[in-house]
Image (cartoon, rainbow, N blue to C red; front, side, top):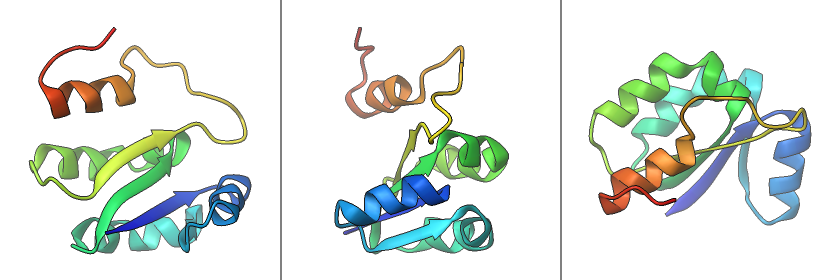
Length: 102
């Protein structure tokens, strides 16, 4: 299973330095997001929060499809975290194990 990252230049560079080979900038990612979500070789898709917010419809469509992969993880970008009422990581854990983790 592959890990794919879509985000701003700084985030993508950090993940490349960590050894992730498949990375896309926000412009390339927007064009390839649906293709990446349908690729069965992709196990984890890491998106910056702002990119995910800009493409919320596509992200939520994938999550509601009940497909197991790729798992979508949203991370803050260089600007810092986005203030939200619901923490996406917490919701991911809740869906995965069936209980809320505090």
